[in-house]
Amino acid sequence: MTTLQFLLRLITYRKGFYIANAAMWTVIYLVPIAPGLITKEFFDSLTGDDVLKLGTWGIIALLVGAALGRVMLIIMGFMTDVHFRFRMGMMLRRNLLQHVLKQPGARAIPVSPGEAISHFRDDVDQTEEAASWSVDVFGLTCFAAVSSYILIGIDVQMTLLVFLPLVFVVTAAQLATSRLQKYRAASREATSRVTGAISEMFGNVQAIQVAGAEERVIERFRTFNEERRKTMIKDKLMGEALDSIFTNSVNFGIGIILLLAGQKMQSGSFTVGDFSLFVYYLTFVTTFITNVGKFITHFKQMSVALERLTSLLQGASAKVLTLKDALLLRKGERLQAKDATAEAVPKERLDTLSVTGLTYRFPETGRGIEDVRLELKGGSFTVVTGTIGSGKTTLVRTLLGLLPKEAGTILWNGKAVDDPSTFFAPPHSAYSAQIPRMYSDTLRNNILLGQREQGDSLNGAIHNAVMEYDIAHLHHGLETMIGPRGVKLSGGQMQRTAAARMLVRDAQLYVFDDLSSALDVETEQRLWERLFQSRGGATCLVVSHRKAALAHADHIIVMKDGRIEAEGTAEELLRASATFQELWSGDERTADDGAAAAATTAGTVLQSRDAK
Image (cartoon, rainbow, N blue to C red; front, side):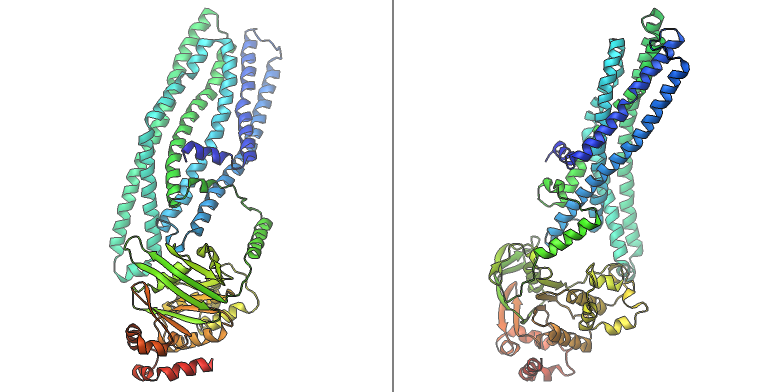
């Protein structure tokens, strides 16, 4: 998509708002036509050449009325401009965010969050600016056309001189195009690095302090800021240089006009009123010339913004940015949209989840999973285990659509799941990631994440996640602010908060990725027992190598080198799988005597399952 096509799609997003805005500002720019003619009549009245014969006070009254009318029109113009710009900016950010959220979670954005914020803020603002200036140029062009017609009727030669600077303005803007775009791209990139560095520093304060890297981090930030300063200066200087060319070209034209007007007035072919009209219109014509130059500048810079915004789409068409869906700005509309979405995703009981030929390889390393085949029965408790790097997490992330599968079929109750990233969400599925993501908000809000608290669901989720003791000893309980990325919580508390966040959502499939790695033995045992007892008819898919999880499993899948090496019950795998034997004997945290637990595995597992 070219920059011009992008601009046209933007201004036609809401045709009514754009037309109203353009019409209002066209009227505002045309209004000075009348005061100019009134001013001409005033000066001609001083020499007896006036036509209307209104008298001095009558002409002054007309000028005051025209000025007040223009003030009121400008107020209305700003209102229409704000509505147009606000909706256009909201549309761009909504479409961009909507596209990002639809992507596989692990590859949603190709840059750091700080850089992405720069795209959402600076590049959208630049796009708004260019589209808004198109309205001014249109209105001023209408003024230039009408005023030219009037001025040509007085003196053709003088009129041509008035618009001569426009040629220099357009030429200078075209010659500066490549350098202007280069400096704008460099300044935006440098700003993104600074924003990204700030985001990383705030999110990793503890890591920086523990490593004693404060000075190195500050020095790195200082380097980024210095690069930004240099690129911003170049960008600003380029813009100011063009503004200077535009302004001085106009001033040069004004000087020539004044000299020529003086000669014509001496010869008697030019009245005082004619001269005042030229001078009055000259102010607005110079504004037109300058604004044309500024619009060209903004338009060139808009091409940089479009390129940067498109980079976030990762190959998708730039048309995604201008999708004309409703913004739903009113509260009632937003609630109706939520209700419609909830109705569009009915809860369907999981009887069988079948996966065939599931494959994904990381582009950077070529490693991943290949030709994975598995089947989960409704209400089962399946554990995926294996050594580090065997593909456990990659398997569940690909299954859930957080990584884009390269091949394979996923069937939910025999029906193909075409878009796993959209399908595997409540009420179908709920997921707890290996590394929980927390927000600088209250503990309650981190668990609910915008979901309305219904009945005793929150307390039930807290109990099942073994968090009631922790919350009771927090000074503000559920209203405790946990800080950026949950910095005020321990690793175990973060994992259990993530578990509560998942369990508070009623789902048919719960997926746990290494949920208990940071827990002590007793808490871990209670966690798995409560989860097993309270899950009802829900199906559980658990990534873990911990005995407390393996002891509850109906079925265990052993991964190795991205493939399923073996599967079965704990008893069967201890007899047949060397990899599983190593994993089992390597975990000594479940019981006081790991060797004794391994010797009586069959009895332990059978007793555990019978008891449940």
